[in-house]
Amino acid sequence: MSWMPRERSAPELLTPDEMAQADAAAPGLGVASYTLMENAGRAVVRAIQERFRPCRTLVLCGPGNNGGDGYVAARLLAQDGWPVLVAALGPPRPDSDAARAHARWRGPNVPFTPEESARADLVIDAVFGAGLSRDIEPDTAAVLRAARQIVAVDVPSGLDGATGRTRGFARQATLTVTFFRLKPGHLLLPGRDLCGETKLADIGMPSGVLDVVRPRAFRNGPGLWSVPDLATDTHKYERGHVTILGGPIMTGAARLAADAARRGGAGLVTIAALGSAEVYRGGSPGALVSEAPLPELLADPRRAVWVCGPGLGPDLARQTWPVLIAAGRAVVGDADVFTAFAGAPDALRGAAVLTPHAGEFARAFADLTGVDRVTAARAAAARTNAVVLVKGSDTIIARPDGTVAINDSAPPWLATAGAGDVLAGLIAGLLAQGMTAWDATLAGAWLHGRAAVEAGPGLIAEDLAPMLPKAFAAAR
Image 1 (cartoon, rainbow, N blue to C red):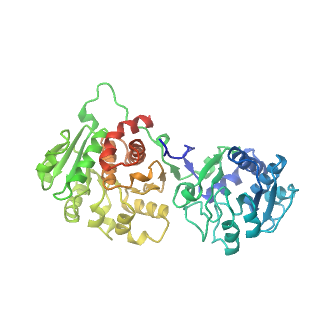
Image 2: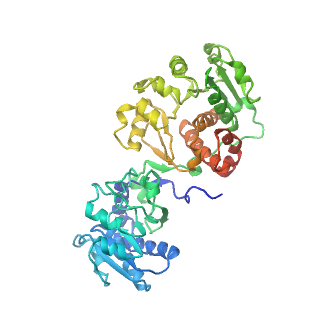
Image 3: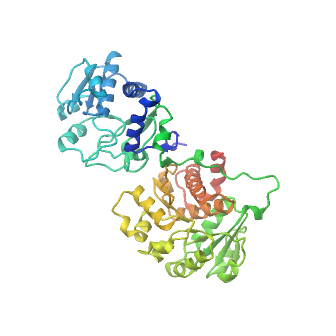
């Protein structure tokens, strides 16, 4: 298939501040900071030589460690016969590793101007790293903008490594070379696109620095969770019972969720029809349909997992949600739940999992729309004491203790009506089998994206559930 998620990497994601802590801890674990800089510059050169032939190359160096990596790369490329020039935004701080790298550069220097940038066939952007705390100056942006083709060191200058947002301006890179661990900004949009191809390089950072940093952000993938294993004598009741509330109008949503819960492994799935039961009975023959009153269904303790929201309508969601929460069930809240409780996020407390898209999130958590998406997701999870999944091409999953994961397994053609209903049902099916809310949500997000990859372009929501067996196979 022509579209696949980027190469898998170690799951930990380090913010720029956490990466700085790792750099500071490395010498105490036996690796000198200048050794890491030399290794980083060498990694940049290796990645460039794998992808480009020798050409007129300009290395743009900033005054910090990112610039130091650039000086190392310039020296090593020149040693290999490449025609290399360096343009410095400013001198390195005296006695720093960057100053040492600068002193070893013996090649030609040119002014830091758009004209010099435009003359080069390839520009290496080593101006600012991921920790830039202010907007790029217009003069610096003009130099970057003039480049024909850019290879970025760590991140494209102007990209916030913690949030994926741009600080005034960030130039599109063909290739980005980063080190030790990815940063959230490599996966979050628009950063993910601005980085172009992202190469993660091992520069000899001791893994023990992770014990110092203790990262709280991760790239989602099967290494973080395991799909349920079934014993040879497993029966359907041991695989759990999912009940999905079905509204009278948009009946397809509950049916999509039910198919996904079944494909996700739930032993039994019931649609609790709050309206047109005959429509639901005309759907997939393996899904049970009940018209029993909600209290009667809740009297069965085996109905431990519920889905509330898809196609339900705000009024019915407003009526039924508090009943499910009061009954102490594991509830996946989606779709109309967020309209029903717009501006009242405290009403969402007690859910196991909440799965809003960006618009629904803004509706329910209006006071969090001014902050970056990772911070907002963390705050929503803490406020509701639920796992919160904010859907998108760069889906963010947060749990109440502040741990977050970013999911990048989904192709762009997953953006289609009904896909969210499938995700809610899939998560519920995993919950029913005993996975924790966190693991079920991580697994559901990854499997959902992988199923879309398997289906390929032209996908509609009905295609997702039949592709889940292939997604499960890929996760094992």
